[in-house]
Amino acid sequence: MTTVIPVFVFVAATLMLSSFERYGNKNFGVQGNPKGLKDYYINFFPIGVAIAPNNLEGDQAELIKQNFNSLTAENVMKPALIHPEENRYSWENAERIVKFAQENGMKVRGHTLCWHNQTAAWMFKDSLGNQVSRDLALARLKDHIITVVSHFKGKVYAWDVLNEAVVDDKAIDKIFRESNWYRICGEEYIPKVFQWAHEADPDAILFYNDYNTEDPVKRDKIYNLLKRLLEQHVPVHGVGLQGHWNINGPSERNIREAIEKFSSLGLKVQITELDVSVITSGADTVKTYTPEREQKQADFYKMAFGVFREKKNVITGVTFWNVSDRRSWLDRPDRKSFPLLFDVNLKPKKAFTEVVRF
Ligand code: XIL
Image 1: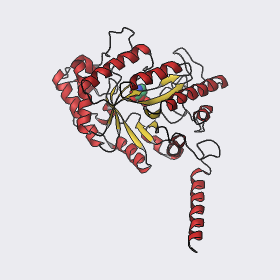
Image 2: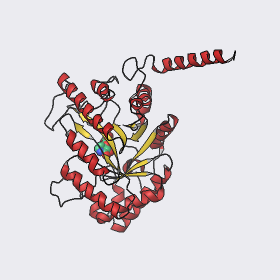
Image 3: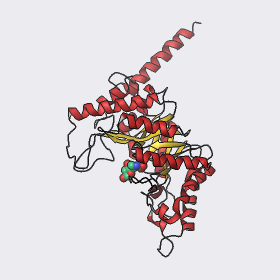
Image 4: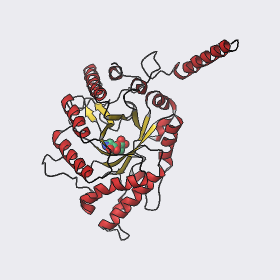
């Protein structure tokens, strides 16, 4: 009994000290509050972020640890980067992200196995430099998927197996994007990519991932594709709504209906690449983050997270695409998009406050 009290006091003091050390002068949450985004959402879903390896140092690494419990590689797991030559895989950058996640108790989403972008040119050329045959294209895609998924088996819990295979065209009978994969292999590559990923890691949760998934026309094309795949017993388990949105849309109704429609197939839904730009059209060149835009963005985020929380039974993750407004993939030399919850100094924005107020 006599030793219990001093031990308790010692432990309590150590905990207070270490939490002061962690948060004392680097508070990336709400002022004076060490809770991060992930802590507010602990009873809802993991909160992730897409990162480059150089985000894993300094103040950004601290912000990531405090706020997120899931990581996605923004680029370094994509085909062109992880498999730059036929007989060479480049694992190092992806492994750094996986190691950081493991050390900090975070999940890892794999992004992406089959896409029309960021895929090396060699994949589509034979030894004479001509376009590959259908058989060679499929053999290479199989090798790529089996090798990458096996490499991260048990470390990457979910994969964006197929990215953006459906076209934006309003014509309802035009479904597939004219990618190299589609042109060379026809639609039969689609079930195969899921089957290969499943073969390599039967425990991995496999996603179809796309943007504009809230647009009713594109949504229904994706829905019909997924329905057919499920009827054929293809191992697809979830649909990723990228969530590259802006302060004008999509509407609350379209977001809710997309989630409801996809989940009616028995699929899980994740928001995989969330950002809400203040730029609302290609012609928009306003460079400043005006109070009006800041408020509209906060309102949009509040609305979106309200829907996500309402749908927590089917939503199994929400991932932001980049850490803070310091760098977003949407930025161009002539304009900034300010799409995230942390500002250029890594301080939480008004939108952050709305996302954690419920
Ligand atoms: C983007 C990255 O953020 C950029 O750094 C890169 O130059 C291009 O790709 N949809 C996706 C992501 O599925 O992989 C894209 O990421 C953004 C759009």
